[in-house]
Length: 241
Image (cartoon, rainbow, N blue to C red; front, side, top):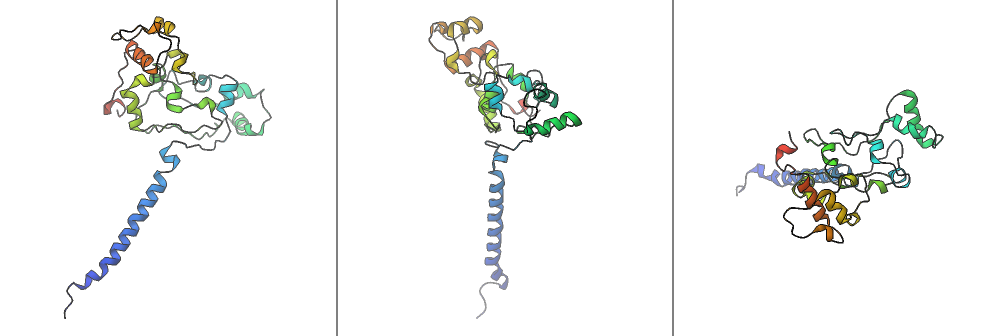
């Protein structure tokens, strides 16, 4: 009796198995790469050439973010400190600490310290640091409690959905402009009468905010949003120019 199926169909099971192995291998490799902290970013904590404990410098010593990241208020891109900024202190403080050897070598050679960048916006995304920090968006909102990190890690995903959440509801993140660099600030710290005297309150709110015991983040944010006329773009052109 003749074969019902052609001879070439004998290879079909083997081809199916090979295809399944290739697909499974591809999915495993993709998951292995795209699920790593370096790709998803949150939790990514690279080893730096010099261990810089932000918790000591900021929380214990009281250094302002802008001392090292001096461009943040005036430029689209922030900056890491150059060697001269480090040596302003470390020509006198802990100058013999071996951990500072890369900084000292940089100071002598003129070559910058090769810091490992954590936050690097891709070329097709436009982001302006100064536009955000000058309108009430704190370092904390994007970078987390850096002032309590002994080793800095990425605290937020910085994905498009994450950015749009803030652009659609900025009142959830806005704070008084004099508290932008206070990473420990909380809405409970605001004194309602002083806040209303300086910023007012939303025009459509019948309740007198100055008489309240505490203001919520939403009340503070709505006030600042109206006061500063904040209307963040939510279309593609806002970030992809």
